[in-house]
Image 1 (spheres, rainbow, N blue to C red):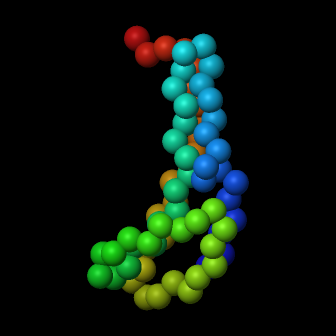
Image 2: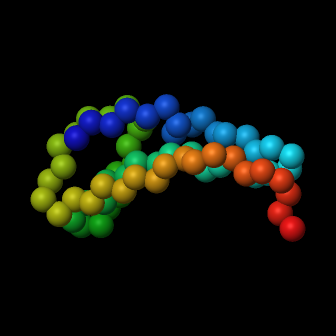
Amino acid sequence: MRQFSETVADIGRGLHGGEPNACSEYLVIKSDETELKLSSKASLVLEKNDVLVIRTAGGGGYGKKE
């Protein structure tokens, strides 16, 4: 598996009091439940029963919370 991302450390700022977004995150959960956090550029072989978790960054918020 190979993944390349530019949003792992790049936070989108919110506008008019909105909150920033969370960064992207890429994890592999192994069969023994250990977690391997991947860097923004990674290449590895997944094994049977490994779980790939991808959390995307999205955008920053708009306006203050009410």
